[in-house]
Image (cartoon, rainbow over all chains, first blue to last red; front, side):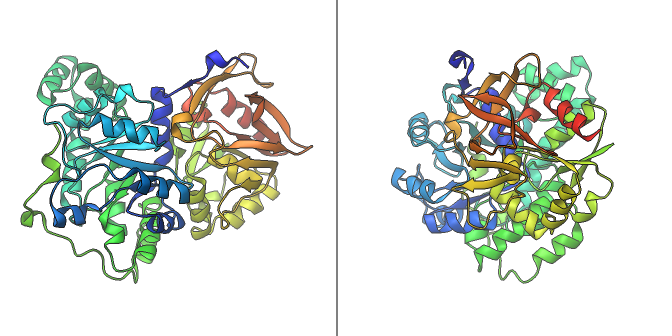
Length: 296
Length: 189
């Protein structure tokens, strides 16, 4: 065969993995044992990190990329994709994660930002990136920098779904409005959202975000996952919600089944039974640090 | 004609769009009752371990196996190919498959996501090459004597057919090309 015609790291290849994760649950794990539980429960991918967001909140201090040894330990036990987080703007952490062969990098506001102005130039990498967004403008700026998946940020580590709902509704609501706009109004939308006009025009045409839209930040129950899906998310991230609950394995399985059967209330009722206590959580109005404000 | 698309997890919507472009009614399959009235079933790309578990919890595995035995045409892409394979190397012990393609597959056989690739495939069923996308693709490491190899890349089979089962290691649902879906639909008619 002609080797010349084979290419890696293309936009289609990068976005392709996000397509494959649709309808699934990506779970935060801090060690190999949790990664096994997540995979056994039917996770489509795991996010390897040193501390779940709930613990990052409690501990305070600077949160950074995880130890490569810990990430490799998780890669060894997992057959599903392994993602890892880099700090906003910390392109060297991203280079290191790419060299480890992680399948996706999350340029994440959950870690302490390394750059107050710039995000990572994600086009420079073969590995695909996911980035958080609280609104459509932020999502489109990340896409213009090369993100292949957007996750609505929510507020990680709280177990409170309210911000996830707000961000998802903000993004999908503006998409709906743009599909109703005429050509002249699209220029104004680009200006208002501080986003590239070609991406606004693409949304006007397709009625969709140019990359898959996942939901994260505060999901703790099967009903939360189904809520995100019914609001238009393509898949969900569950961080602290699983391993900060009383009994992680059954809860993880229930959230996987709820994400598939998000329209079927009878199945949602069945899988929500007897899961034990969800993570205690922190209400949004009790927070000192809001991760959602990180990102520019 | 109504074609079902297994919608437990993965890129099922991309397959539904392709079927619509071909003028065929598509039905998302999540529970056994969804199998009523379909004449073919597509198993999409996604995570095969996840889909395998959901096939059990949704009680879809046995009804689908029965329908395939009765002659329903099936088309598996990537994870869907793994679900149709008779043997999964380095799969999970609890991972089930329908075993309708006499092949051995190795999950993520081409490496991690950084090694995922696109390439032009010569096939025996299309006149012009087919531009194919491989995402953490399974590698077909053995084909049985009754399996037709319809396309190869790197000297290994990537599109195979046996009886009423068609399997692709790549994702025709992500290409701007309907020809392989069309070939599957012809096998139903």
